[in-house]
Image 1: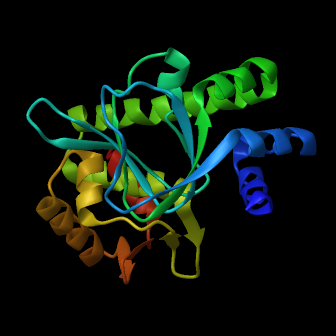
Image 2: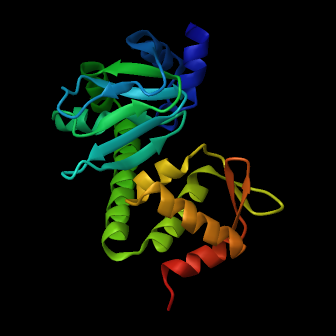
Image 3: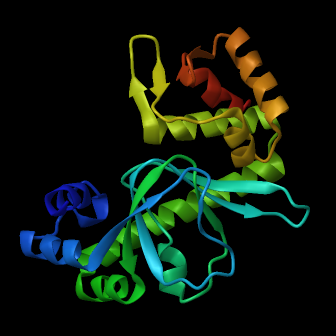
Length: 230
């Protein structure tokens, strides 16, 4: 288990420049936990006592609006960190984290995580950069919800996913992420039926194709034009 955990920790971008001794210390101060599918990891209002690293599975970060509608902030894949912002702010959780699949997570206690931030300036820099990128994406999504219609929001999301999870193939860009129509709807502030209809329109227009549950962007440049029709 020890070698397996260290191998995994080295794959996380935040830890890539740590020495062998530092990786050994990180291995000693963290623990692995198994989380079953559809099980919450934390709720809004919970105290922020841990930071989480996703080893296997998928995790959804979401909020519930005043009218009771769930809005997904992020879908996390293996290798990503979450729960760090509230720990840094010393504030209660303001989101819900839920395992979408049977998942394995690595848990770092608050005090140990803050100690790493203070002792390693390069770690703090990479963490700040990551948080800034996430906040920028959230702001962009809010702008989408306010100023753009559903087809444009969907085109933007597909292009965003292609940057993080896209794989170039002879046919186009294959999105290497498992995502349902309901999860897409939660990400763009819509409903599943509308998302399915718009994806069908994109398919008929030759913009995308489906390989099972995998979406392939056939004409990403055409999707880009939808973001600025001028």
